[in-house]
Image (cartoon, rainbow, N blue to C red; front, top):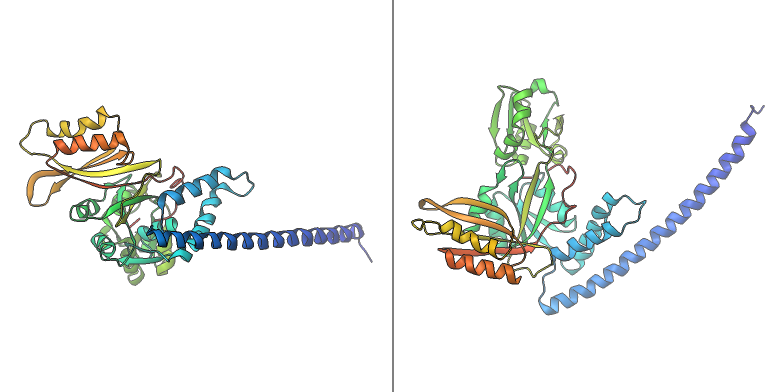
Length: 384
């Protein structure tokens, strides 16, 4: 015998099933339309690729991809989540770009490092990622033609510049052709996932420093081991139950580790800036940065002031000034400047020329599209 209310529920359920079937049919139709549109896009990209090949243009354009993704974010009326626009279209761009030619990108490996994640985030999955064992090898891979582009960390908001990268620029003719920003979230990983089992903590010096306060509070007196990469630390933790690694969430998945504690970095704005290396200079994009390196005469009073004065006079904003010791010349320094604008912009060109006239030597490392403002707003989980 039917229970009270059962007669009314069955027709309601049938109506709901009918409505679900109608909506699912609509979704299926929209998905087929999306697939058709993607294939139309792919055909246009193939035509672009043919024109680029005939004209000798590069396959990858940092400015074009940055502006495309930013425009799509701004144009999104919802309800599709705005934070999902970039990753979805990043993969669409990556897949259709591969129809022109599959890019090879060298990075500081192995798999699971923050450099690996930055490369995946920026280029999508339809590229060939070439891991190297050291920053200098990333430069070498691009110089030898083993990769079209390289990606190296250059500075972190917590620990400052990556000195190995700046030092390698001295002997390289490569151009900086783009930048990538990655929010860094560090995790403590081990085989058991129990903090009581941790006898030693391993990671790269930068990661250990980024988590200094947490380590002193939670693991006082525990030995800290420096490793070649966060991935190397994760491999060590996978082989030794007494070791915990500071690394990314991706490293936990790659090496079969369990999270002891998540997001242990001392600053929540912990972000690493990477630069892209290429063999050709990049044309102006309308929103660019320029990097240059200068030396000054040691015995000349006011030399650094005279080097910097033209930038103020021409209204060129300096965003960063870093110094590094000159190899083989004690107490003499290389000065690395980052400034707003492209080297072909008249004011920038004039300031660079006058600064060069005051310098003992100089070289422009590259003018390149600056990363979009939305490039690193949320935790991603990685750096070297």
